[in-house]
Image 1: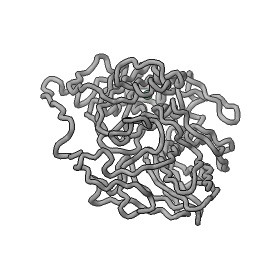
Image 2 (image 1 turned 180 degrees about the horizontal axis):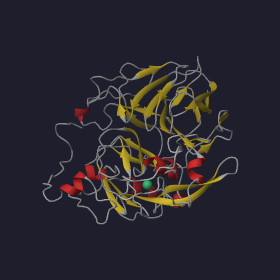
Image 3 (image 1 turned 135 degrees about the horizontal axis):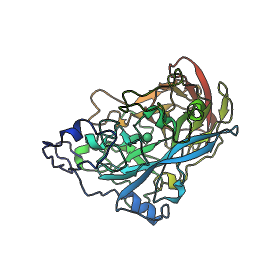
Image 4 (image 1 turned 45 degrees about the horizontal axis):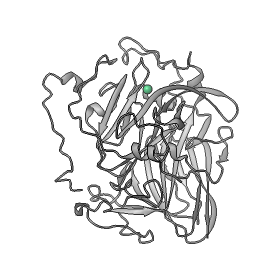
Length: 430
Ligand SMILES: [Cu+2]
């Protein structure tokens, strides 16, 4: 891809008369906005999932369905039942009732993505495609882009990497209540050919300084090679750090009650219950939907051998949570902090080094992010500390068998209190 000659030219039209729609959405929305930049979607993933049996219909060609506000009660490890709002996919039977986190959306770079989103209001909801750069109406930021009702979100992703999507209305509550999922942008040809749903897959990286990861394609992006500046990986793992503070859930008067109590006008004179909205005390901890069955301020491990159901991963089969791999395989870890605090991710000293190849959806050392960034070697025993909504992607490769645990330390939102330590099994066999 050449940035001087993009594959698509988006026709711009003057916004005279439409200024209100662009400057600030009516609130709550009471009409469909103009969608002047409608392009024909060509995201192949829904049809490929249908052919592979992971969904039972494609309602609209080349279009992903997302339905917000499945009022679902989830049972915590200690038997406590709490209300959530979860995201489902009307075309995908595996998502009935919603998932926590929601099903992963994978899209090839450069395709025109359409997401048909429905939410049961009032009050309104959005989907914000965190880290993508769509037009203002498609950005899903509460109060200043389109809020649903029902809305067709459109964008063209141009950077391969790890993102997530979430409701951005009344964000602190709606995110806490589970309205989020991973969004992964893959190379343009990721869904071409017979191995579209398997491994190895490729992702963007600049590994000129790290020859231990074979297969790096150093062709310039301008070459038009769809695999330019990418590296293959054999094993993929999702580490999504999730927390739940039950106070937020049980204080609701009904499963769909909204915090804060809405004032008039909404968003200005809202009433925050005293003291609890800014005192987040998580009691339940998860890694990518897997509960950590122990009280706060202790530690627990998730089981080994966990993989993500392909129906919840845009059909891709074999993505792991805990890691089982073989010596010499390239392992790619995608990590999202979906907790409401800081997290610290670490491999024990003298085990496995990590090389961070992407941060917040931008591949380090890859144009146009090549001038001031480069991949980062993180020696075993060095914590990677980061905050809410941020992501990293890191490679590792074992030269000898090893059985160990990565740790994910959940810190308070001030970053000064350890709330929980999760352990993720990593087993590398000959
Ligand atoms: Cu919402």
